[in-house]
Image 1: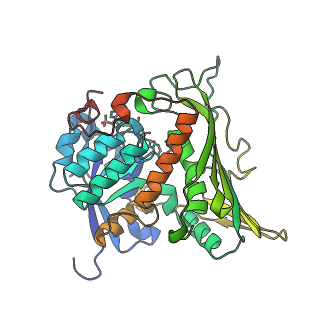
Image 2: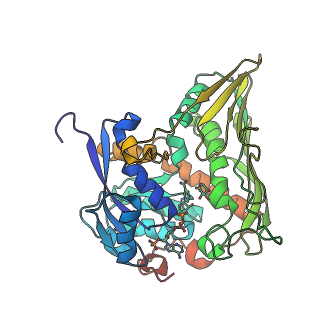
Image 3: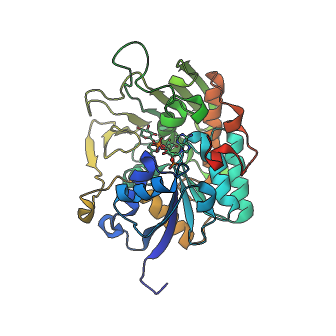
Length: 391
Ligand SMILES: NC(=O)C1=CN([C@@H]2O[C@H](COP(=O)(O)OP(=O)(O)OC[C@H]3O[C@@H](n4cnc5c(N)ncnc54)[C@H](OP(=O)(O)O)[C@@H]3O)[C@@H](O)[C@H]2O)C=CC1
Ligand SMILES: O=C1OC[C@@H](O)[C@H](O)[C@H]1O
């Protein structure tokens, strides 16, 4: 790399669903538009477990990377020597086996949230990345937003005093128009236990992200304290949780986090009428507005009543019809880590992903939510139907 040239990362995309499309469109945005001059991204390959044709169509959908190789299976993708890092964009159920497939093939990995279905799976991924000297990161994109970075800095600088409590919610009103059910088919990944569906793993991970990035991440390294967890869930007819509340207690730090999520009511039905995250300290609080996963504004309210509203827009690339979703910031983090030889991101270290998985696992257990053996095993199987595409 000549001095001054941006470092280029070559991405392989595993799966062609909704989030893969969004992420790839972000990769195709010009980094300079978001003031990133040191890194750039290339999509060099895409795989669909259903067919090569589906992967070909995907390139049309994202309207770019037309030279990328396309594959009709995940094993073919991970074998491609031109790829630096694989983005795993499959349902939760598949993350462990798919990420292992990529790591075992010697590829760095960015794996969608929720990282895994069980904490043991998360530990196994980390052990494998460590043993193989590979980069691995959970794709909790919200952490890499300038908004999140600003908020963490404000907390660290003491602007709201000692933080005692963070309350967060991510909820949607997904009630069916008729009857008592939800609007999803029972086979949909939001509610299907075979795909590790449910509110906790899909939505709850975001309010938990706010609890963790404000109450756990900022604890001094020598005094890290994992929470004790008390949780309750109401189950949907499929067996997945539809309505969950999780309390995280950090007794040594005298703080509490409350994360709630439901598919039965919206976090903010009046649109910006209420904050969806409240980070509460002795000198004031920081309020973050909907949605918890992609917030674009927050308010600092001081004890004396003074307040400041801060807008943090997500830049759109004019050359891509103004597209810009905000996933490019996590992609830039991957690029910088790879460039600098780092195996994990300091913004979401491996230990923290594991503690978050332990927290969600505790909540699932207390809520009586159970998932099938095929998707909870922490034994890697390259021939698992989750890897070969028969499932
Ligand atoms: N960061 C964020 O904002 C978001 C993250 N997500 C996360 O991304 C992941 C995927 O979600 P999303 O893209 O919405 O899901 P989709 O259902 O839209 O796509 C999932 C893709 O995974 C592949 N897949 C492989 N096996 C299966 C299977 N048995 N059933 C269904 N799909 C399968 C398919 O691609 P193919 O046929 O090409 O192999 C499919 O298109 C989840 O972990 C979710 O939590 C989701 C939405 C937003
Ligand atoms: O990650 C996500 O963020 C947005 C939600 O709508 C989606 O279900 C979830 O997977």
